[in-house]
Length: 400
Image (cartoon, rainbow, N blue to C red; front, side, top):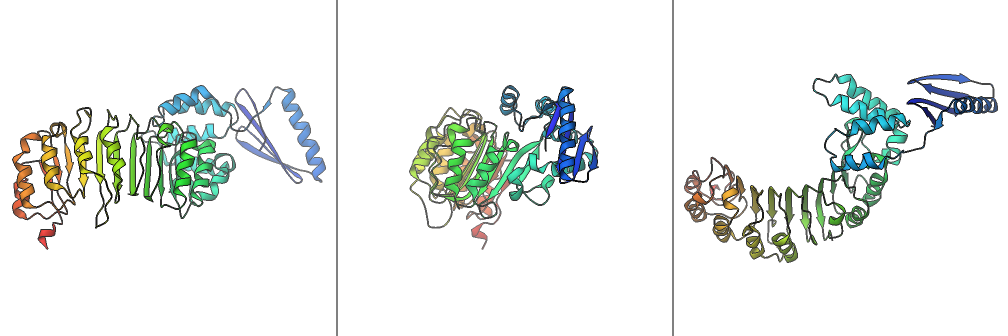
């Protein structure tokens, strides 16, 4: 829809056969003519009058590199979006109004009608605000399970390889569209065309990306994506035979790696990558008889590091080396800073629980200990009561 702007005043006109729809000040008037030629002549005349008065044709998807860089540096804060929204609105971009509506709807005590107005505006301007992405969105675009909106942009995306197919092409559409410009949280599920989608991320991942989740995936080569997302904070990978490459993401705060066939290269990477602000670490080596070739010695090397000052939550699941894990954890530099420890699903027996209890002085800050799904009896659980204020020990195999 052609739009013309002058000092923030937006004027729009569109011809449909013998009819002209003219919008100004948010109100639309309709003018009908006998023939399309008459309507076209009147359109040219009205446009000419506006141009002579100083109105300028609004270009699609106006850009402001400086403001965009500021937002990308703090994409989870609404502070800078308001300024950007005002600038977009002054250039006739309907996203400016969308930003204003969503910022207002986020305020404490905001009336429900603001959320309704946001949904209406998104629906009315779907061509500009979604374009080809509309075919992959949920039926209710304001409460969309696929695309979650915040601050006038797609803030979260949940792409399922079976529902948003082909996965790599849909991801490319999202990352190339203006609405995906400040994507913060991306989740992709199931392995169909996942490597191709990862390759797209390696080319197009926005600097605003803070969270990445890949679930139900296997045999992925992820090494090329990390240079594109130096500001990543949260990473969750669930699958098998995942090649991490050099996971040099220094701002990482939470890391979850579940790999039933974890390569040795993955644990070597974990043992040496610099993560000065890492707070939460979960390593799950998968259940059953299928295992990878990852070395528990690399896990112990990770625990022995003295350059993880923020690490306070650790989960080690299905390690298959629980006696050694108990000893190495208690002796590690991180023991004194741990607040939450998850040793569930480790075939832990009463003897291991007593061994951990003997070393409780090494965990002065521990408040939560999870030893569920092990082989503990009531005696083993009782031995752990003083290790942490909160001990969870449900579904013990020894109970059967």
